[in-house]
Image 1 (cartoon, helix red, strand yellow):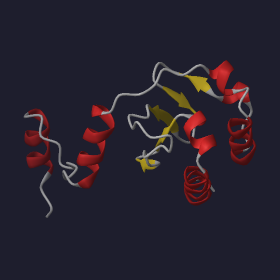
Image 2 (tube, one colour):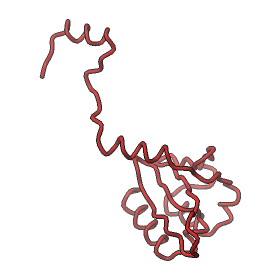
Image 3 (tube, helix red, strand yellow):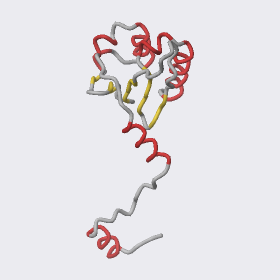
Image 4 (cartoon, helix red, strand yellow):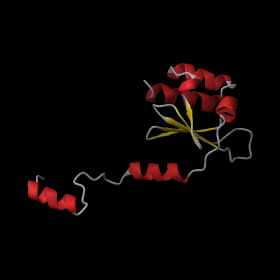
Length: 130
């Protein structure tokens, strides 16, 4: 639908944006991302983990290019959030998710102990970061 310049100016003065994003799965994903609690991250400890260093190599980044935030790591291409394992069993039940350039995973320790989580992480990184 097209509008005249006068109509455009009136709508703009009223604070109405012509291009409004539809609420859909994106809104639901954002709400889920904001409602989850994340583990505080220590980049120095992560740098000692072989799996983390392998991930850095696969993304083509060095430890100096990663920025530590309060609740995530900023890789530039994506933000990596770590969730706590709330399950009582030894095998983590958390899954790895990708939501709007946010990688959400269990801790590196949990991923290191689970071949299924490692496989899921590598497959996800292979498809999302290229």
